[in-house]
Length: 97
Image 1 (cartoon, rainbow, N blue to C red):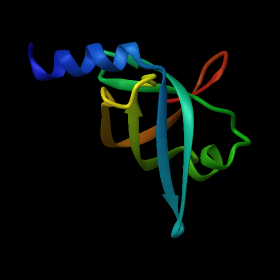
Image 2 (cartoon, rainbow, N blue to C red):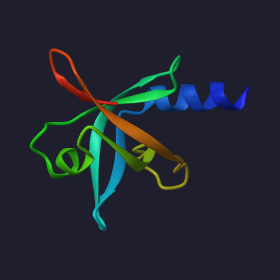
Image 3 (cartoon, rainbow, N blue to C red):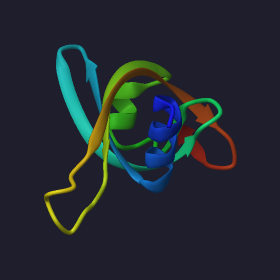
Image 4 (cartoon, helix red, strand yellow):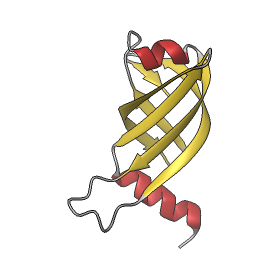
């Protein structure tokens, strides 16, 4: 299986991502639910404007993130890491992607 196809399949099965943002020498990480868009290779992260990580992110920021499963047994633990830009998007609900 092609590498991106395997990553897409795995990420589509998960639902929580940890994303970390740095602003003015301060760092903050948070867990968030996400929707993964396989066509755009993008996470749509749900958050509220008033949270510390959303405030630090603002309209756009560099972020680092991890996605991992929630296995009942530690033997099959797998995960992935990423570096990206995050942009504030608004629709009927506030979305960060």
